[in-house]
Length: 451
Image (cartoon, rainbow, N blue to C red; front, top):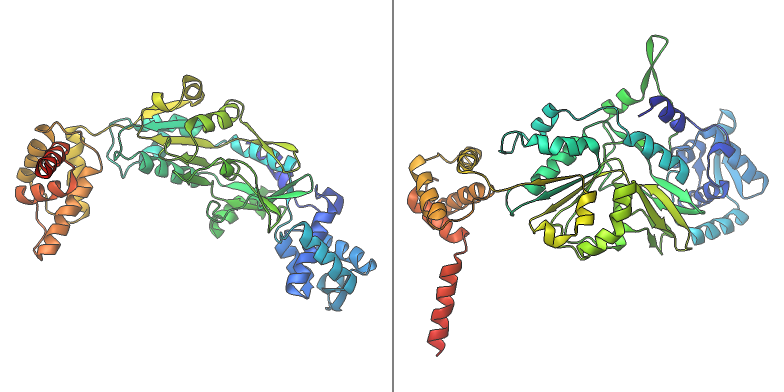
């Protein structure tokens, strides 16, 4: 990332014609804010809209000349301390502004500036190291060198396909990656962007987390003449942790396109736009309300080109960056979900399989430790022999935790001290596992009884 280019892009705007957006959009926000709050001073305007106080002062002076606003209180610091209210003509204009949109907040950034910022910040100088990836996955018990399958995909920031049987930690691995990315270098983003006179809301409090004050101080300080000075920037931008969007079966095609809100009269950015610069996890891929083929048709070009195409209600098309780590996680057969064309566009495919007996032992002992249940080797060997080896059952990484919790629940019900015994293992496993042969036998008996 070119720091100089980014600083130039984020530099404070001190002239109205350099805001890069129609002045009418800014005036509409002023009208709506005055209508909602009554009397508003210059500092409040500047805080809400993220526009320098001198520009707000200049714009309000123009509106005063047109008899749209009036000074209701004058402070002792000149026009910058004025408090304004709407005139009758201004009230009418405010109602007209609400007809166009109800957006009140930071003034939007132009689409062009937004695109530039994402392209600059997607090329990160900082790289995720093997140590960082191992630390991020350190709470999981995984095969040796598993981090080498994950790290390159995270650094490339393109796409990753996690597949394998359920219950082995695919979602947990993806969430660990999201935390790793979030705590990497933060990202500058606007609350909203504008194109064709329309406002597109990008900021989502469920996705975008502002950085701490300490992090903000680090990233807004710059070395000037041997000392650190505060970096001044356009307040329409904010510094966030890199976003992570996580969706499951609720994903629909509408959430991948611009969504017009008829009441607020603004557009809501699609999920992949909100995830720009971070990560987008599609969990339980293949179980969404849209088919894998529909998703393939929607994303096959963005995955290849890094550019997404969105459309306004007017029919106007716009290009936006498609720059986030896309993670697909599924327990279904990948070859039956999507075709080769889709898989070729996913850079790395990682199988997250069931643990070996050695890893299963480590996971089980760690689960016992986590729940303060004394480990008993005899009971564990009994578990392996009777419930895995004899029925040829596939081990899953989630089993130890669930079996240990079930044993503890049984002991709590009996009001006895939790302990690991072969008898309790049997009782817990009978509650936990579904024996298909036993179910078939019971079904046959039922049919016989009915006859």
